[in-house]
Amino acid sequence: MLKYFAAAGLVFVCLLQGCTSSGESVIADSIQKVDLKVEALEKVNISSGSGSFNIHLAEDGRPYVNMQTKIRGLHLGPTPSLIVEETGNSTDIRTSSGGWLRIGSIQTEINLYLPENTVKELKASIGSGYFYCDELNLENLEFRLASGYANMDMISADSMLLHVDSGNLGLYNAEADEMEIKISSGGINVETFGDPTALKASISSGYLSFDGGISQGELKCSSGTLDVASSILPETLDCMVSSGDVYLALPQKEAEDTGFTASYKVSSGDFYNEFPHLDNDKKDKQVTGKGEKEYNFKIASGSVTLTQHEDD
Image (cartoon, rainbow, N blue to C red; front, side, top):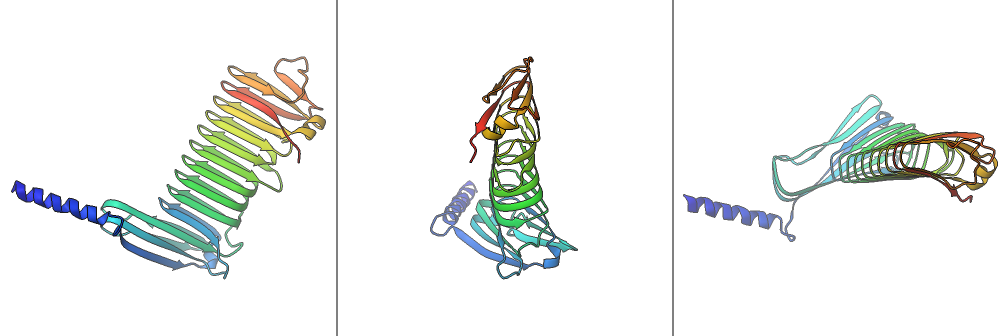
């Protein structure tokens, strides 16, 4: 009996090795496609666990979504499926998990094609893998990345909420009236153009880089690094640092003319102001230029550094 089980186990291992060999690794390759209704695309909700998810402009104006699935190795049970639900003016897109037993890998790639200027509200929650989209003009964007990578280009919205638990997000050539950023770990790189943005950023760990105009700022750093460069002097600015480092680059010419008043309280850590300034007879207040803008800094630990952003 033991010899039987040993022989069966050996056969099983050989089968696994055969299934996962490079020459015959793909045992299933399928594509699912769903045509979408234009009237249901005002609000789009996306939930993707892994694999890649890409959003493109539908050049012919016909919206649809497809998913390609590749299975390598041993797989028992149903394959992942693309689920699309359209209700009124909203469309939900997600995938089902597949299989009960898998030794190997399942790769999925989803491509969503949208007509220009049809989506007003986009909510996307990405578990891992890769996310990409470009050329979207929205009213509201909510994006959450658990891990993996995301790259968004030429996205405009009245308001944006970006939340990264882990992984890396790049947002380039963006335009937003309001932007809220939350980072638990990982990193976000943001580059904006056009009208200035009201920025609210909170980082627990990891890294945030922001380059663009800021109309007003609310910055919180518990740990990690917050690197912000503004092409204009914000009207208001509040910064709280528990730990970590905050670097704030402000335009040199505007600082010399309009100027700002920096009020700061330091329990432990450091506050550096590289601009020419006067102490205004108070140890915790510095005036640069005419001192018209009011900025507040509170540092429990860590550091804040104000640097000069060279004017273009």
